[in-house]
Image 1 (spheres, rainbow, N blue to C red):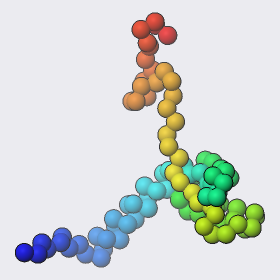
Image 2 (spheres, rainbow, N blue to C red):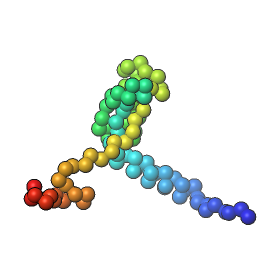
Image 3 (cartoon, rainbow, N blue to C red):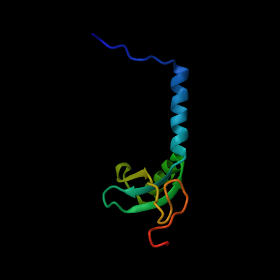
Image 4 (cartoon, rainbow, N blue to C red):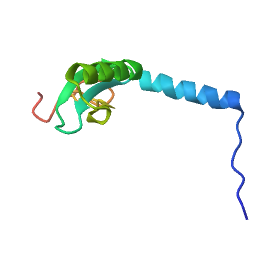
Length: 94
């Protein structure tokens, strides 16, 4: 028996795509070379800005398309700060 997939309208599809794009714009990206893993740029805000910067770096260094990629940066954990952003002390009161 075949399961019927949930159908959505084209308008709903566009809204979901737009919301996904908005989420990508909140990230900070880094750009790197795939052959040497050298980081070419860090802290590029937004997906579109990362695409443009990667293209600029490809042209500047004369690299091929598949030699330059970008990824979202992972969040940096701060020592002495809990996950919700409040500070805490250890057993020694530090």
